[in-house]
Image (tube, rainbow, N blue to C red; front, side):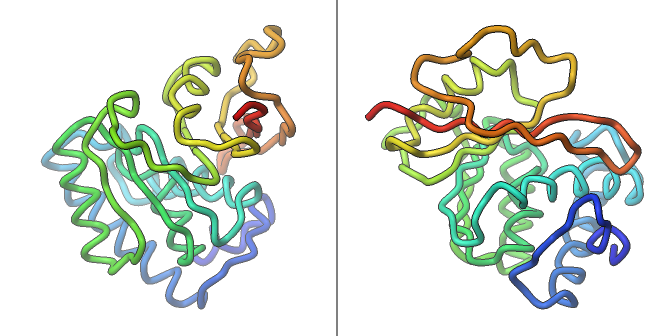
Length: 208
């Protein structure tokens, strides 16, 4: 775990004691492996696979959010990327949106066991939530195509609110812009633990 936290590809600037971060990430990983035997949370089953594939990738988002942002993680699933980000930035106000009840039960167990403050789980489809919480940033990982992601995010944001999503090189960015309410303001190339290249795309809402 310490190797991940100090990996230069992440260049993490953490907002909590390193020993606490390492302890909470290990507790999260232990819970995930345990629950993964009962319900389908990830196709990766070993702690090493989950750490390298999911936790490492989730921590890449840390470079484009602020430590005290209000964030909605849409399609959170097993808590990626929201939970690892909350662990390294404990002052985040985090909402995890997940439509599958069993996965929400897992997320609720993580929030309780790790004592995560200002974190709630919503068991709804993002497009059906009412009232919609307004936040600074919406984050998504492996949810859908870019336009569909922005469609899901738009109602959670005021003007200048941001959407951060991660896409591989195969994603078609030829459509310009992919959504009339947003402008692409930043594209950051990132490399996964095993060398896979992808990009963090940061969109800003440009209408009220």
